[in-house]
Image (cartoon, rainbow, N blue to C red; front, side, top):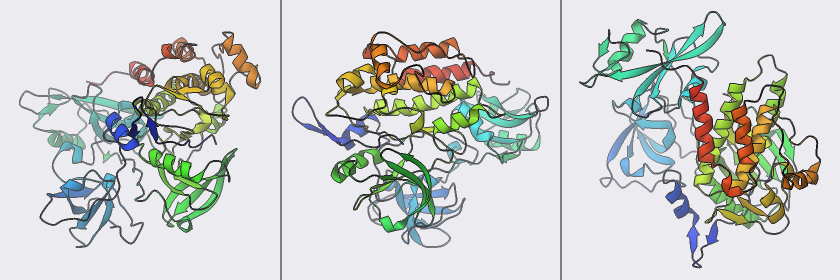
Length: 498
């Protein structure tokens, strides 16, 4: 387990003023600010919105409202900026708090349908290929042009004896209808899907079942929670700053719990940084859910990632009969860069980016964890203070020698992470111990292109070298890196079926 948190959620500007974290984060990404409990409803003041449950939800506290998938409730429209809404169940005739990401507006829009998924192509394939899904499982999503729709269907390759996914672009008619083949025209998407549920007629399979949606994280209503409500079940990992456990909150929610060794950092500094961490919301970041700080050891409660660290996952997979292919490794690189792109846009510096701090979910997607000493920065560079612990082999020269950490030093670390990924978790710079690595890097040494256990594509290695440019300003941005690897994946796949 790497470093966990720094300290500081306000930073002086050149004019001597301070920028509040909430305002700054909202400016960089207005949809990602912290959202707490809604105000008490005022009847007659707000518009009423009818919502439908996307998933089952069992009450976590006495104030929560349990519901089943498909249940209809009403909420006040003005409360939609909060993580939790006060809702009234239309059948049970009772009120309570509900997680807002578990419901959708109950109307006839495409986005309110069970078959609609807000996913990119690769994520759609991951979802459709999950165990439990059968041939004929399907979903509808936006195409990469963000203007048209795509029908994605799970199929089975009889020759390879493997499941696969096929994609069909849904073309529009001048009058507003849709079609896949000109032989069959439909007035809307509902009619099109109804038809292909009965007949395959040009599709690889008849549409059998809607692909289940991945259940989102339920955000806690309070950042500081009662320690007695948390149960440590099983130790998962250990590190120089503490241990990681599988745990439960309120005997109902599975979570990961990190316990910090006494004296690791001041409680006040940690609480301030935890508030900033709680605001970061992205599908490629491990979500901070809550903390326990009133006594030591400090508990950090996050969402649970079933497969553990990427480092162990890669090393275990290296000798597997079902070993990851180069395409799978590039997908991992793309997902990490997606999460880091978000931190870059929020002006956060990770400072400890490596495979040990990337976690793997049950569906084999990855998320960036342990934004170790991440801090909100106004400029592009944060000046480190005092003596700090950092992983030498992953640290950029300007960070190691001058304590100057920035998103560009994170990019350097990302280049080393690319080496870890393509070599299935090999320790970088195997020929050099510790501090000698930095001295050789200063002289111009860079790791050669790996040749095993899988062949490293030239284009992949070229990106590694770009990340290791001696001049920080010449290194690529995470926005570029995500675009590069995402485009690499799309370009290497088959085009849409007509």
